[in-house]
Image (tube, rainbow, N blue to C red; front, side):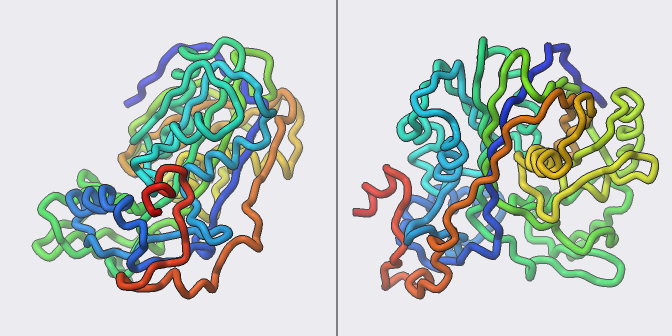
Length: 371
């Protein structure tokens, strides 16, 4: 099934991004900011059965926890201070560590930029990478910014799954087998799924859940005259049985020189008949296809007229697609937090409930709560 809208092209002039590798995180068994995290943990327990006392992932910079709001602010640093924009759109599906201080509110308060309209996109997952395009045409006259920011709060626990020579086994814990927010989707309508009273069995196709990385991406977009020309193709519903057919039809329609597919789904859409299909070693959520494109552009400096296809997909068997024509090189900027500011060996980060951790809240509101 294919849903498409006829909308004008959109143009991208710059892409700024950062990633936070999993190895730079620490686990906090009983963080002092538990009060700010508890709403999220209650939701995890209600929907996924996750224990309330689960360890929490934390990225520490200069003794402070870095949140998705901090990451979003960081990727907006390259834009000129006090510049005016028609709109900003923040796309984020995972909650911020400090849910009572939403990242969009933080951006408007802390970033030295001015916006006429400000909007948030939630619960779209990787599809937000493309689905922001129709929204931009409703909110923009001259120039706007779109930001993708995702940070996982709970780690994926490999001991929750079992592997055998034949495939993947997940013990049945709930009557309704569905989604894992940590990156694994268990399809119910595929022929290769076997349900039993003990659990769910999936024949082995991959070595396990695809690695993920937290990220933030900011892009400058215009209605005309930019470096990258985007044409919105729309959404497709995919399955293992029709994935190659969808890819073949898109190749016939757009004749792309390169294809960038959501990294976690590369095994579904890889095809010998397709041109170069790219992926990252770690899936970067809603920013994945844009980070792939930015990294490829910076390495290859393609000729004007190069055609690219972006396919952002999720575990719900949906995929959003847009085509990209390269007219010139956009501004590209890979950002990092200073290496010396990451506290790998701060023993206080592992303290139990009767001890206070040294890491402090990084967001304005959460900082006031912890005093």
